[in-house]
Length: 153
Image (tube, rainbow, N blue to C red; front, side, top):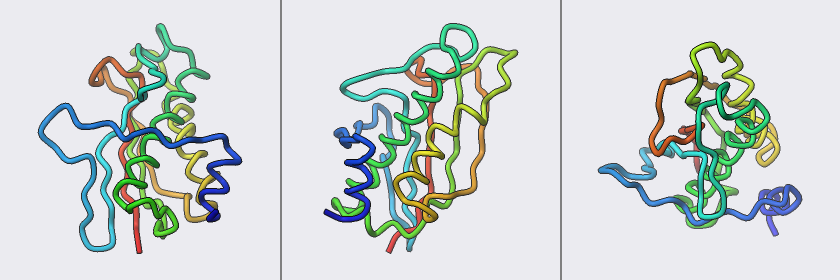
C-alpha cells in the first residue's frame, strides 16, 4: 500500500465510483501540470446531504456534507490519475459553495470539512488556498458543492 492508500484506509474511506456529469461538462481536465476538478456535490451512491444549511441542515451535518464532497474530489482525482494518488504534488485550491439560509454565516467552518480531509490524506501537500461562498441554491438541492485545482506530477 502507498502512503495515501494507507491514510485512506486509516480514515475508513472507500472511494466511491465518481459521479457522471448530468450536464454538458467534463468531471475533470488536465492542463499542463494542473488537474481541474468540476464541482463535486454532497451525494454519492450511498449517502446524500440535501437541504439548506442553517434552516433544515445543521452545522455538524453540513461539515459532514463538505467532507463527502472532499471524498468525491478524491474519487475524481483517482480516476484522472489512473489510480495513482501519489502523483498529487499539492492541493492548490478548493472552491466551496454552501446552500444556506440568509442569516447563516459559518460558511468557512462548513468547508473545513473538505479542507481538513485534504490535510488528513495528503499532509502538508493537502494544505491549500480556498474560497467559501454562501449561495441561494445548488444543483439537486445539495447542501454543499466543492471544486478543486490540483498540481500533479
